[in-house]
Length: 278
Image (tube, rainbow, N blue to C red; front, side, top):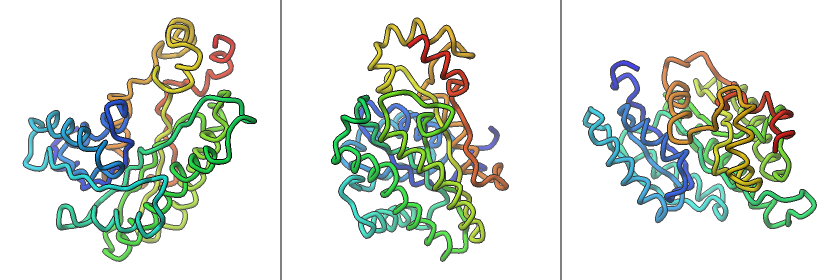
């Protein structure tokens, strides 16, 4: 992708944290290797290991800021708008000179279950973590971008269950929340463009450790569903998404906003065939 200096953005990246969060860990590591300075936002304790992993993997990637990683704590389920705003303010000052982008990877998937079995508490948690708190963060960082007159890029990571063409059973709350994110991206892009703020989404496909493949059995998912996927494989959560995110936060995509890019190996297109196998 050329000189790392071209891609050396200052990025607030939300993530679930912990050893099983391969998606945000893979994105963070790739961005750091390209010289980005990162502020990881989420569960502070869980993110300590993620930050150390990113520093270790990106430390030899070239450039003095290649492994610059800070952590800011935020409880996505319990926070209010003021707490989210405070987290953005802390992140803004981590590198003394502001931020260039927000990448929201944090999400709550919940259990794969019949829609009539979803409890009120789980539905509320799903909407809070996946829609309301990300909106608080988008709002807070957009005000910073506006006041600094710097512009900025916002990228929301979603999943095919939030798209009309990628539905699968057992995820009514999760899919509804991500569908709302798709609409939030379009509407925010329409209104924030006057401040030179771009808002886009990356809609990812499923990997073998997502709840739906696990619910039908990993062996069955790998052996049978692989036969109908155009690329004959599932998403690699640590390698398949980062280049698209990197593109969207950088100036190469300066005329892109309000767009959802599908990085799903055409899983969403072949969903009817997948379901017949599953």
